Length: 281
Length: 185
Image 1: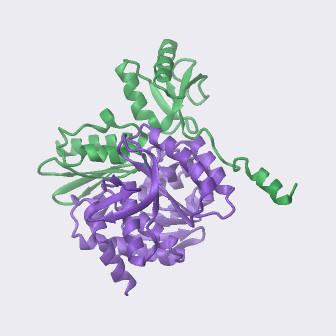
Image 2 (image 1 turned 120 degrees about the vertical axis):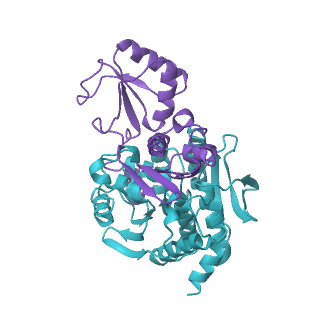
Image 3 (image 1 turned 45 degrees about the vertical axis):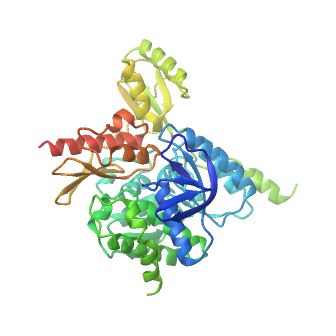
């Protein structure tokens, strides 16, 4: 669930397919640049490889005014009242606290709660509203981890300098985020070294292959969250899914022989081979 | 009433520690007249705003402030500046002493330079000044800004300040200004 940067994109939900580099959601063409489209594209590719049904995506057009986000929050309250998903990933949405709170109450009341993953703007609103611990998994990058660790910051824009200075001390930031109840049950931190942690500490790390250019490429975090979402949806254990997703995303990036100017669609095309290679090891 | 129903009813309330005003900000002005004008402009623009007394941490400005949706700071600031109404301060409701990020991380890739401000990264080819990638962020204007800026020269691309809407857009503006400064050195 997330927004697409096209004002005229209606709020739609349906199966997501990735064919010949083109993403469709409920037969609507969606350009794959970065953000939620990259996440959905990566999840669709992953689902194909592991042989599970195509993911269902809920999207709305929003260029930052928040209208599409509001529509999507409202739409999802109705969807969650009627449908069950075993895994749900929330992504690029305008952080609006009262909309999030209403949606969170609906999720909390579900008889069978899905495994909930929050990334991007939805992770921001989950933390800023005080509901972080209601989620199963957050997927921050280093800058976002500093925001989660800063109990006072309502948005990464206001992360305090003395915490940003701690960015090389990932374990300390993770501890601080959990101490202040600003983390989900699991955190997958994306960075030079990717790691999965819970409130007890780091559970697994992946640091190869290293492609320095990946940090500059918009959407590489989104593809990691997309791969991970599909793997967890297949019933895989969180730790196994995280390890495979972190390795696959890095390998797909490596196969693309990236430069800082590489675009994310070039990496998404390599996800199937990278995933097959990792699964066959 | 079943115990389960009672439990569910109790759960309906917000969590302890939940903060319903965490996405609100406060704008401080020099004069009460500016507050009244700003309120009028923003209400007409469809924003939920309210005039209130300033929190004790804010000791500058007049006796009234405007509470507004903080995430939309960049868009709201642009609208007010177009009307020549400039706030003297903007702070989050939940942290009136917080300041915008002022720490930049720079990474040199040889032919490219990347600058990060808070959660936003902007990468430029040094030789041409072309913006080759925008990464990070979580508000919906980030993919929109990237679609308008990537592939264009720093001097020709629209600035985040001119077309962005949110705090992520604002962070990208800071990265954009920093990379411009570095490329002009």
